Image (cartoon, rainbow, N blue to C red; front, side, top):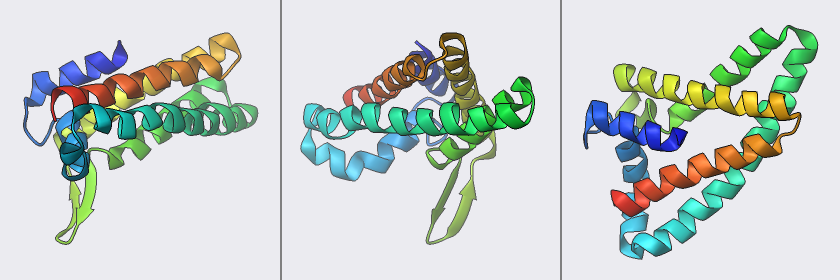
Length: 157
């Protein structure tokens, strides 16, 4: 549901403009995905993304990073650092980009994207802490990634 909310917020605030993170993500893959067609693109990009990224990111951010920080500091600070680091990495999807003209920062929509991803990361951290396992966070992250990618490739491609 968080992914659907993030998609709705992006379109509600920014429509189909370049400040919408779903449009930015879509445009990243558009040149390769459009010739493939909707369902092959979903199979080629969305399904692997819904497996590989959540497993790797959850083992690193909610596993190694958060666990290490909790061992060295209090749980609240460890959670904030984990959530902020996770969201900051995702600014590379939308918010910060580089091309031949140089570095580009989308201040308004980039900040909104950062907050949306921080909210998601906080929920994933709560899933891990309450369950004592990474698997609920991995499954939630996987569902979020799948919904976002299906929206991107299936609805707006």
